[in-house]
Length: 468
Image 1 (cartoon, rainbow, N blue to C red):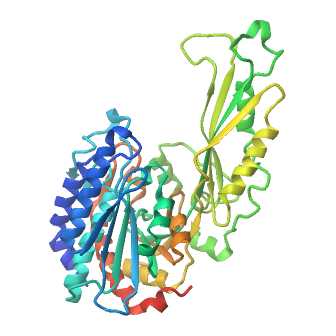
Image 2: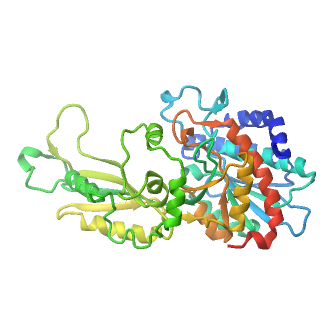
């Protein structure tokens, strides 16, 4: 049976499409300075959309970089819990442009698909919340939400959230809440509702090896002096053993291992390796031995070579011992791992693998991103899964973990309240890639789930939501 919330959403889905068409045309690419003016326009657009939705307080929060949007709508119920919704309004670059089938900033509807940069990550997911809020008010007959709603919509997530923690510190008093809802993730499949229960952390570095002070003739000097390109290749090869385990000493010391019950839940998730490879456009899976693909992606730490090079790379041959070589590394971290400890361990690992006669230098992208974990079975989690299940016609909601990283852990730590994930992106949405799309029926279901969630949270009350 369709809920009143669903009936409202479907009756007003064209409003969502109209708003998305407008917002997606703003190329708010935070990583590219030429588009920073558009990121400001994107913030202004969402601020106005929030005002039209009924939020009495809407503010643009400046940072040392690009702006965030804050919106607040108090409930008329003094005992209502407060919910903080997090998302981001900036988008990824579109390169390589020639691989797009349509203009990335001219939204194109193809049946039930909408293609544009930001359609899934994260503008579509933010706008389903505004539609869901209107559905919540219509279905309950309320003039204000059943919970006090606060939205914090960041403008630099796609460029690493460099100013987000400072913003959280500066605005901490405004962000008091009883639960945080993240709306920047996805689900397993269109017919398999799920919710994220953990996101990996991240540490990223550049390693540079310097040998001779100039490129040298390999016939005269080769085999007699250390070659930085060879040394970098050996460093990269030393990262893993034959079982795919990371060989940085102490790397696994703090890892929170999956319990047997958690592994049983992972095993219930219908992930087909062949379908996974199709999305990846790859020919084989790989990784740490003894774990499934889903476990590797969401619940195990990794080390990846993101780029490697040095010496001559043009056409034909140039027989040299190069002066310099580099490797770019990233480390995805799981629950209990501390980025600062991993950074220190990796620095020692690089030092131990730097041969005599080679100078090594390292640079890190900030202090790293911490992982976060969501306990299963808390009142907040159960309220969320109940809302999602209803929006998906009673299907059970499976827990999963996100392989990517974001500022969610910082938000969890700074606000100090339970955190849950309501996202409806799909694995084939091609976020961060050419031809990004979103399935429109997923946005409608997301709107219904959000509308139901505010009522579920209200029934729990402040004390109930904070239980762990």
